[in-house]
Each structure stands twice: as C-alpha cells, then as structure tokens.
Image 1 (cartoon, rainbow, N blue to C red):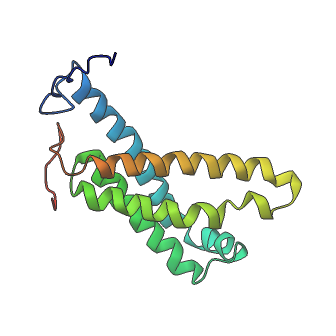
Image 2: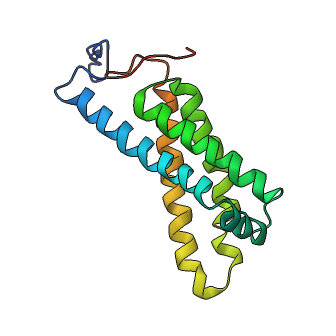
Amino acid sequence: MLPEIATLPLQSASPFDAPLAAELFLLARVVFGGVLAFTGINHFLDVEGMAGYAEMKGVPLPTFSVIASGVLLVFGGLGIAVGVLPALAAGALALFLLVATPMMHDFWAVPEDQQESEMTSFLKNAGLFAASIGFLALASIEWPYAIGVGVF
C-alpha cells in the first residue's frame, strides 16, 4: 500500500514575513557588505604595497588589478549593505571572489609553513563567495530596509 502524499502549504509571499527575518537580513547585509567595502577601501589606502604583493602572486597588471578589485569590493559591499543594485553588487563580489581566491590564496603552491594560513584565507573567501551567491539569488525580490534601486 502506498503512503498518502500530502501537499505542502504554500510559502508566504516574502521570505521576510517571519518574525525578525527582515531585521536579521539587514544585519547580515550590513555586516557582509560593510566588511567587504572596508576591505576594498584598504586597496586604495595601500595600492603600492598591495600591487607588489599581487605582482609576487603573478597577477597581471597588478596596480590596475588592485584598483579594479577595490572598486568591485566597495561597490559590491555598499550595494549589498544599503540595497542598491543588489544583483550587480552581489555579482561584482562573486566575480571578485571567484577570481581572487584561487589566485591570491593558492595554498597548494606555497611553502609548507604558509599553507595553513593560505588555506584559511581560501576557505574564508569560499564562504564569502557562497554568501555573495546567496545574495545574488535573492536579488530579484524586494529587500526590506533597502534603498530599493535595482535592475530586476
């Protein structure tokens, strides 16, 4: 005998209808976006030093790459935090993390005494990449407490 298959109730119109969901989502946006925007600002405060490190890692056009990655981080971080162009902001962060993570944190190619530190940074960035993909997935719905300028 087959078990009875019951239908599931429809989900609410918004994932933010649950108690405190909108406020927690805002907190996540501000922390996530703020940290990445701050990281991007640091790119502009030490272009020369970061370009030297990028050159050592084999990054092409290291000075341009540091500035461009700083732009992606600031734009993406602030966009997520305040809710402006969330699809573009999340996409910018995902692109940065997808490219920069294996290039700058190549734990498999560094001396043994640096592997643990590079692997930690690689895994941290992988988690940030996953979060940026999560924000990208939610970019087509209206975000609570957001300025609300978007492409979609």
